[in-house]
Length: 277
Image 1 (cartoon, helix red, strand yellow):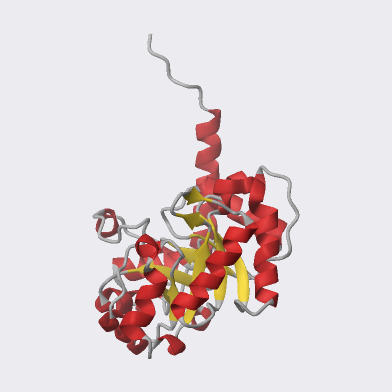
Image 2 (tube, helix red, strand yellow):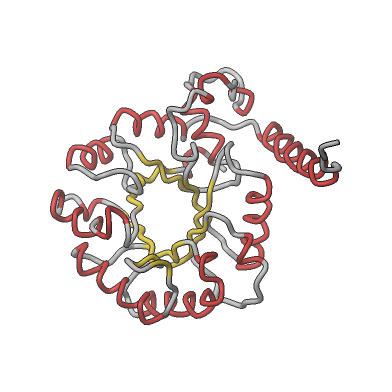
């Protein structure tokens, strides 16, 4: 993928949006916001127009539905109400609506996909899809669904091989043509591991970078995604992430890395369990 085709989304999972942060995002060329019906204790959609109503038209907004105050539910009627309420609270229709972790309610997956397609056709969003933390339960079920416009999955060097392989299978089975990434640092970009492990081998040599930027660049390739949601409260960190989109990845290293992950997983699965004497 060309670096020009990559883009960063400001993820609002653990980030309380402020006007300063949104203005800073636009200054850095970040025009994607990623939120969800349940973020900020179900207040994220109301908060955005309250703090920056005049800026929202400059952003492409993706949101997710599936979690409610009483838990996860893919009931079509509840999803429809959630999407309608999302548009009302945002003061505009979201650009993309994703099923939020549909693996938590697999039995309702097919009907939920159908209702999001209906909502797209009704003009309540431009595109629809699914956001999954772990696709494996979905792959164990029998379903046929309309082709989603987009899929959103975990990306980066912290994603286990089982998840990566499941993503590949889901993309083929659901015929997903656009893939987005999330959680490139598993929620903790400040972990000391990012400073102690040399990840520069994933880059084409001769590029200036720091550890965060290398992690971002790798996440665009593991698996290959066109958009990466990054959560931060600091414009400076967002600017660093944007810098990571411009780094060229060594595709041979990525291929070797994924092969090594599979090899180690196979060895671990075949190893005899240790028993106390």
